[in-house]
Length: 398
Image (tube, rainbow, N blue to C red; front, side):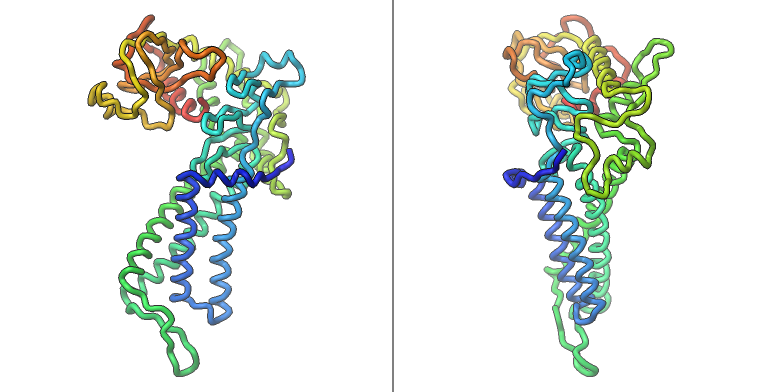
């Protein structure tokens, strides 16, 4: 698939995630430049090289950040369906996109599209990490901790000199003259201390995320597919029926599926290289079986009290407000008489899909307080490990 940047996607900047990320990137860079002018001023070749190296980190971070954000993950065409009509039975149908979900694609409720090889929706770039921008996203995750680590060292040297060697710094003009370059005051030190906290936080947090991403790249998985595989291991099967993950080609080939000399991933986002004995629909068939198993475990609840979708419904009790699910999944409005098919429970909350909804409209899925409903059939009673897997997987896929 050809990689094209649509500059209209700059509107993705109008979100708290990219704005916070850019603030951290620019703030840490500016503070670092200020420290370099003090600690190692560019009056020598080594000083100039140091400043160029530090600026190089900044440009690399910004380049990969904007490339990942503007390129986007790649979306399945609206109304897509496989070339062979008989293959539709192996795929899930997306009512929002009015088409079938291609292998490895999932619908993102925030992007409102089916995303090719969706890994997760990243708030920092305000779009999904998927097939097209996965390479640039990982390079961003690599360059950000390295640049911040460099900045942290610069900050540390500057604070040490401020605390132990005085607040005024000099550089040598000639053999006898010392000229003050910058005088550090308490306000600069406070800003420097804040920048140090930011840089250390980015180094640790983004570094951990980079290691997670590299792990799934080396196994040719996505964040969503790891949960599908976890549930596949626990799903009851007939004797001799063994599920084989079709995309694990060996760590070296897996690496080259994402990182290429051309700087773009292999494939068109629809068709994938698979192991011998597998086909394009091996994973999608497993997903359909898991969905069917999930529907069989669902419980029908009748709504007996209205709920307006508040995140802190005080009228439903203090315990409900204190036990809210820690997830970005939506809350759904329910009213007396509605029926909801519940698939998960978390303390005083239930998650499900409304049965009474607008015809041909998108499914209404989300959390609502347990006191608002009464079971119609029986209680949820499936193994705790399945509840956990459903909870984490649906956070990304629903």
